[in-house]
Amino acid sequence: MKNIILLFGTLTVSTAVFSQDLTKFQLYKPEEKAEQEIAKATKEARDQHKHVLVQIGGNWCIWCARFHDFIANDPKIRFHCQGRLCHLPHELQQGEL
Image (cartoon, rainbow, N blue to C red):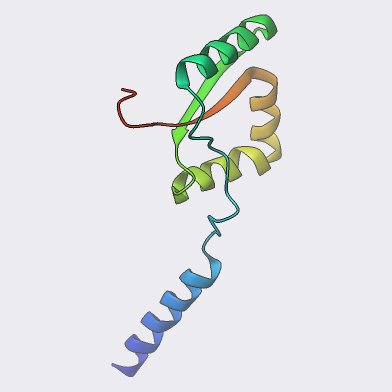
């Protein structure tokens, strides 16, 4: 029983220590309007013969931070995204759907 409690405690502490710090993650700008940003990204993509990747999420979302970290820091994925995509992160506001 002591081993189980020790294992659970170790896992809890290591999760807290190694989790991402979301205070530094500020990819999304809630004040931006989706229609204007999508129109701008679409025009840019059309001019450069690329596709638009609209990443909907929030600065509070750990999975959004992990996805952005994944596409920004993996060299192969970053190479393909930069060459083929116009990346548009957008924080969905209430009433935008």
